[in-house]
Amino acid sequence: MQVTGSMRSTGSKSWRSWDWRFHPNLLVPGRLHFPQLALRRRLGQLSCMSRPALKLRSWPLTVLYYLLPFGALRPLSRVGWRPVSRVALYKSVPTRLLSRAWGRLNQVELPHWLRRPVYSLYIWTFGVNMKEAAVEDLHHYRNLSEFFRRKLKPQARPVCGLHSVISPSDGKILNFGQVKNCEVEQVKGVTYSLESFLGPRTSTEDLPFPPATPSGSFRNQLVTREGNELYHCVIYLAPGDYHCFHSPTDWTVSHRRHFPGSLMSVNPGMARWIKELFCHNERVVLTGDWKHGFFSLTAVGATNVGSIRIYFDRDLHTNSPRYSKGSYNDFSFVTHTNKEGIPMRKGEHLGEFNLGSTIVLIFEAPKDFNFKLKAGQKIRFGEALGSL
Image (tube, rainbow, N blue to C red; front, top):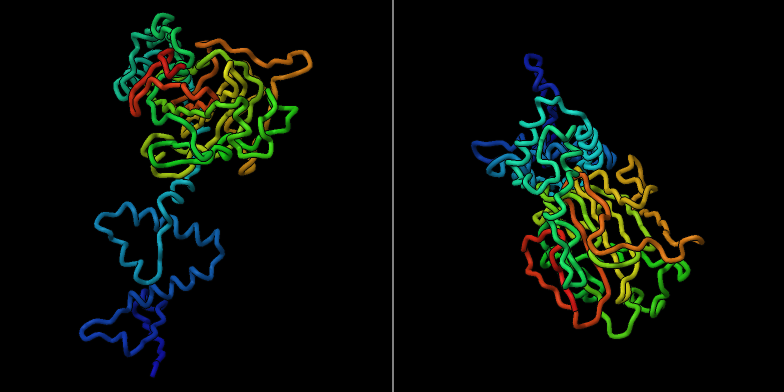
C-alpha cells in the first residue's frame, strides 16, 4: 500500500519545498533514500522541459561530471540521468565566436617594449626557429597576426626539382596513400567520406574537364584517365610551424568551393576522437588539373584559424558570423577572358593560415605513383611528397 504525505516545517526554510513520497520498498533499516527520491522528482521535471532549456540545464552538470575526480556525479546515472557525450559537449563550444575574438586580439598592436617578451614566450612554447625568418628582429612584428604569418628567408626552403609533388607547407604527415572505397583516412583507423569532404560534382560545364563516368561512383567522377588512381595526403600544421602554404606541383586552379562550418581543433588527438572532423570544419577546396588529371588542395580551418586566405581569390571571406549548416558556395576562375583558370607553378605562394591547421591533397595519378613518406614524420615546405 502506498502512503503519500506532505511534511512541512515552519522552523526551517530548507524543508518547506520538500514533497516526500514514501514506499515500503524504500524503507531500508537505518536509512531512508530521501535524496534519491528528490533527485528523481527533479529529473521528472527536467524531462518535461523543452529541449533547449533541458540542454542549457544539463550542460553545466555534464561539465562537472567530466571534471570532478573519482566519478563524484556517477551515482546520478542510477536514477536515469545521462551526461552529454564528450564529442557533443565539445561541439557545443562556440569555437567560431572564440576564433573571431582571437583574430581581433591578434590584430591589436603591441607596445614596442612588450613585443619581445610576448613573442619569446610563444617561440619557447612552440619551438619556433626564428633563424629561418626573413626578419629575425622581434620588434619588427607589430602584432601577433604579423608574427604568425612571418615570411622565411628564400634559402630556408629549397624546392625539390626531382619529384613531381612537393609538400605545400611545414607540418606533420598524418596519413597518405591510395583512396579506397571513396573513404579517406584523417588519421589511422578514422575515415571520412570523400564526397562529403569535397562536395558533389557540379555540372559538366563547370568542370575543368568532363568526368569519365558521370553516372558512376564519386571516385569515377574524379578519375579522368583509364588506369589512374586517386591518392591523398594529410598534413597537420602545428602552431609553431610556418603558416603559409604553397603550390605542391605545376597545376591549374579552375574552381573554389568554400564550406562554412565549425572551427574545432584538428590536432591528431582530436582527429582520432571525432569522426569526419574535416567534413565538419570550415574549409576551402581548390580543384583543377595537372598533367595526370584531377588535382585538389583543401585548406581546413581549425580553432583560432578564423581566416584562411588565398592570395589570388579576393572574394573569399572565411569565418563569417552566420552561415547555414551544410551549405557551401562555389566560384569559378574560368571566365570568358580566362578560359584556363589560374596557373600555379610548383613552390609558388598560394595562401596562408592565421595559425596552425591542416592541408589535404587529393589527386589523380598513374598506378606507379609512389610516396616518399612515413606516417608521423615531420616535413617542411619544398620537400618531396612523391613521384612517378
